[in-house]
Amino acid sequence: AGVDNLTHTLAFEWAPMGVRVNAVAPGFIATEMVMAMPEKVRDMMAEKTPLQRLGQPTEIARAYLFLASDEAAFVHGAVLSVDGGLVA
Image: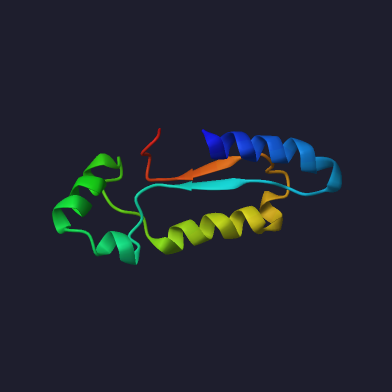
């Protein structure tokens, strides 16, 4: 909730200066830290995700690339969930 509120507040305040503010909210991602966890824990994470798998770091990177691109020129104040449907 804190990141959501900060994103919306900064988006409102910085819009007049032409600054777009967005955020990415990742789910369970197969980072080095997560992959070092016991397999049972990783399996539990995947089972809690509607897509039944961990996300890949490249999938998070693509979300950031999209938000930074011209294709997202009218996206402002958004929190993009990249979580396999975890918070859907």
